Length: 262
Length: 262
Image: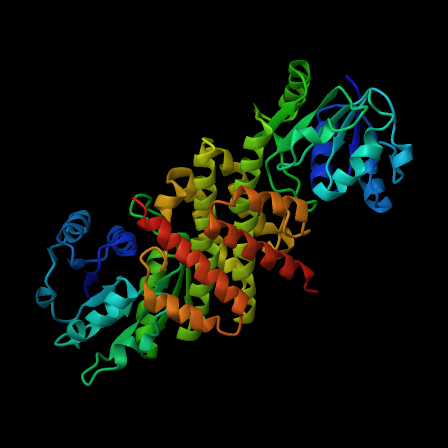
């Protein structure tokens, strides 16, 4: 098994490197532009680190990249150059696999390893329940990535770039945007000096319900029945916050519109 | 203990009537404009029913109303008239208690009993973990409602109308809007012929994380780091859906703005 080089040391890189480390895979190096992040993650997986691109190891490695998309796109040419022997893997939901194949001397083995989950450094997650979506340059390369995926997760699926992009977009709604709705609730409660914890039973039940009912069927609240008197009262409470008011209005309209569809 | 009359037979009325019924409280009557809803709930709590306002019992009853706010506001005069001996209670998050005290012959005992949760007829919820917010016309009336609340829940708090309205607004964000984000994800996945179940680990983790980290601190995704290349790709995928595009844009801006605040 070729050893792993991690390019990036953020939330996702940290979770992924730890999962492979704990599963017994050899980790050869951690690279991050930020010296401190590189050092912290390297310590946790007992590997050397570098913050200099030129010093990234060359040879038969699995290069796992987990960077902000725009940073990765910029880095790709200098990363691939001189390392064509390696297997290049990105972990981004919405970047196409073709990212790796646009150079005169491209690597022959490359692919995507997209774990669909929300990662925070403060809260490590067991990888085994995380769905992982795989794409790779050749059938043999697919098989290699599927094996790596199955070593850390029970849910590994082969998916092309187009479907992965739709998955990623759906995940932004189901996770990032729903979390932001929690954060906006937190903000409103802070102003009323009410502890956020009071919302947790409601948040838990909303998530639990999605296991039993389609979220569309499980929708509740003033918007679905378009209860204008409640909606108008809420918009009045939000009068001093035009952006929140606009979000309230738009989501309420969208809920009502969805409820009217046959 | 005065028996209960339920005015309404929707999701909330059903959950509440069942909780009191199972806790051994006497239920004297179910009223609903919709004959079938009245009959179904009445059967479950072994009580008579009516769909005619004039036939609602008169006397020393707890009248628990659980109706759409605008319907309740219209109904209040004819409901209270001739029933001033009763204890009138509404269960709405954002209606003030003063709803009950605006008549020449108002009841002397009235209040609010607001269980902050999302109720679906298809998925009954154990009431004991649901926070209930109480307000009533006199200290003795508060004590009566607190007792009723404690009989079915571990979390009963006295709260005035203004704070309750803010709680309700926050609940709309944390529950109704986050559920709609799930529903939009479901819609996008349907188009890509991907089963919604794939989102459940992500939804569960997002909710779980809110127990450990403030949602603002736990925020992840392209918007927080304002990853323009991802955001632009997502907006392109949504090109044929202007309302979804607008929701995506507005929530992403709001996430980014919140992240920039000190």
